[in-house]
Length: 221
Image (cartoon, rainbow, N blue to C red; front, side, top):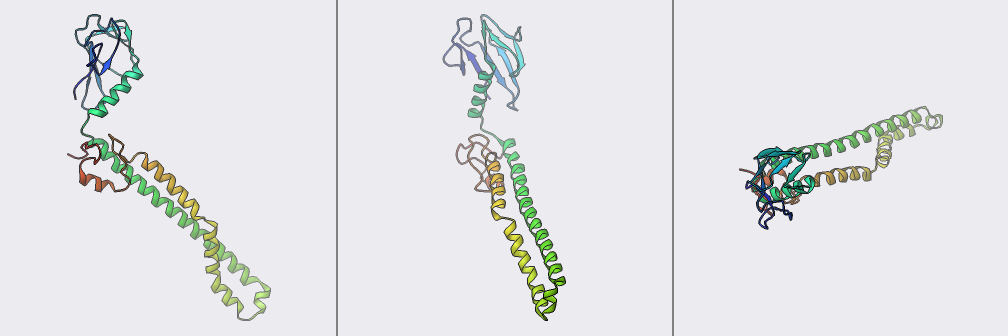
């Protein structure tokens, strides 16, 4: 990627209006990982320094103090503009796109776990209620005194237990949990460059397209 230029001239990517800064003062060279940066002085009149030491070329990060001439750069602002520049000029997001597959796998697994949990909880509750009602009916003296009624009650207990357990475990709770998972998923499952929402289709579907339909950046070689 073309270096990120810094200086007083209008054609720079980061323009500084200061008389001690040269027209084309320095540049930030961007490594292939887009995370490693080398600051290089472009034969400026008043020099470039990092942490108080004059440099010709040096790897830097946001924690270091950078000075062009007598002008101290605001690291947060500089790196914010640098990230915007990289995002705008990058055309390949292959590594980031493949990370989305893991995000999708995790989301689907969490959805399955939610449904399994509530089904198991419902089954356990139904079993407990059913056993409790069976014991109650079996030992009830009034029921014992009425011949034939106990067998019908015993047959209906399973249905009664199911109704009570279903009413106890609300579908609303399941829906709310699934909605929370979807919200988290939608905040991460998007185009790495333009944030195009990809939740409507699977990762495998988007892989077949190879490029983002919106910004046209490459997802697959």
